[in-house]
Length: 425
Ligand code: PMP
Image (cartoon, rainbow, N blue to C red; front, side, top):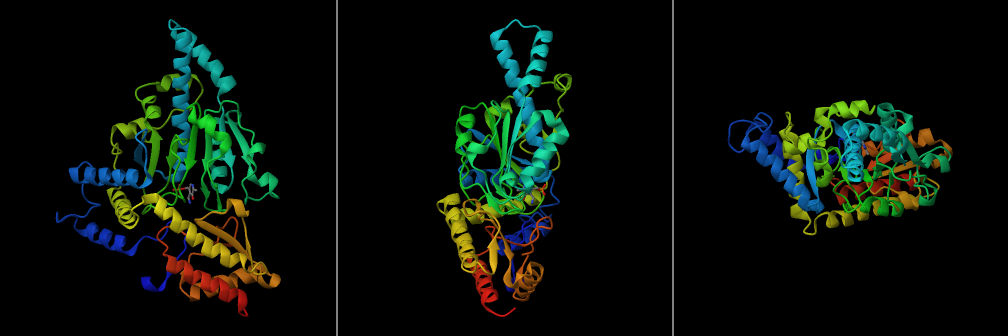
């Protein structure tokens, strides 16, 4: 039974039981219409209300400033690896074009094109901070789309850590481009358990003077900490961890950047520059213009996310700050228990880069890690503690401590961590 288990899966993740009950009822009969929420047209007023309410509650909970807007997209976090590139490139081309015309208003189309071609060759750089498997994947996708010449891996955390992820290298070692069009980072690395403790200092001036688009993948930390929107131009996250069910991908993007896309560069120009043209469904300006309903959106998933947000807003008068305190408390409980038995457990990432959401550790008891981890997982499963197996690429144990995991659930896991360490297994 649901009451007998606690689920620490990394995504899809736990959803609050009362939200599921509301969603189950709404699937059959939404607001006494006789039709379920997944059956109504996405063009109905009812669907528009669900989308608008969810967006307003997201803005409210995260304290999104008026400079930014929310788009609800599809294609997951992986789709945004591409979308962030397509949109940034188009914005960058438009900015360069405006600069060219500023210095020579009467420049002919051919002159503008020639200067743009020069700039693409000599200046266009996209920087990645590779701190774990997901930022690595995003950077590889950039190389696939653009070729290696435009992509700069400014930092690869494996290089200073024996070829493994688990720390965030000193900022002084990062090799950022002089004027990157975009800097990409993954705020919380779900597979490796690494989280940025705060916004990088070296990016502050690049970001705040507006010159560089800073992109943050918040897939596995969204709604658990304040986002410094003064520095982030684009923030995205799949819903399936802290926000709701799989199927929607919200993007929070600076409005002035969206307006640089609207009706601006033609596909022909982008093609003449040898750059990739954005698919329509990944173009932020198209999604913004259509209130996220350019094509059929899963209104059911938006509804579920909306219910999660309503519950969070009712639980935390100080919104995301309140949830941030709870997330810190829950993760500290678990890390403290693991650190208390250094002979039995080894937390994978460095102390100053430990994720509050995905707690990754090895079980070293008795010297045979494989055996020890098997025994740990079996003991946990027997006690209804589920979803603890680490990602297949790295192994080990991973406890995902998302918002819907109650403190009492973490306490159960902590009790088992202590029991396993001290009892004979
Ligand atoms: N980024 C992060 C941090 C993730 O954890 C994930 C998925 N676990 C992704 C991106 C990819 O998301 P999706 O599966 O929605 O494409």
